[in-house]
Length: 180
Image 1 (cartoon, rainbow, N blue to C red):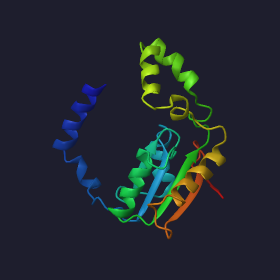
Image 2: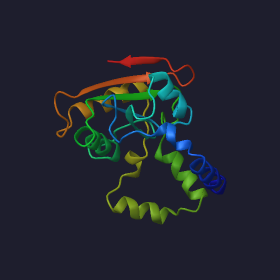
Image 3: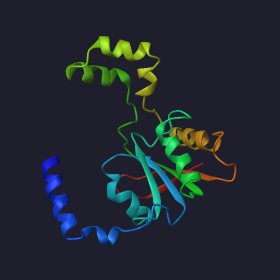
Image 4: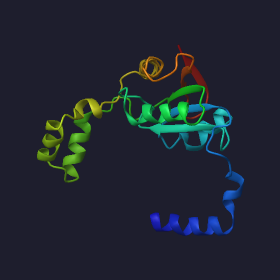
């Protein structure tokens, strides 16, 4: 698959397919969107939000979560605020998310089946990484959105005037529901 993508890319560049996507690194709408990496949202999310290339910083991870105050999603939001001029943040979870009810127990069995040993997992745990917490999903999507919004709003490096709001997007229709 990667070789096919590389071949496509060469043709894309040669035909100047990139020209319609040219923009600056600064989001025109001064907006950052934290959302899930779900494939159903690849095109649906920006289309449903009316965003085009260059409008917003879109940060994606499994579940659209900030799992700790200093994880990579939070780091990206801090960079977006101070380096890229973001003034508003949307947290957008989605219906039928695979991160809902995700657990280390499930991953543990999959990892062992793919050749990761319990010894390796134990070594990681001894280094201070709680795999149960790190790979834990969430049980309730609205509660998860509220928790992520609250973590962002109360972060010591986020300005108090930052607008942060949470939503759940329907993975099929794109309809947004705001979570208070």
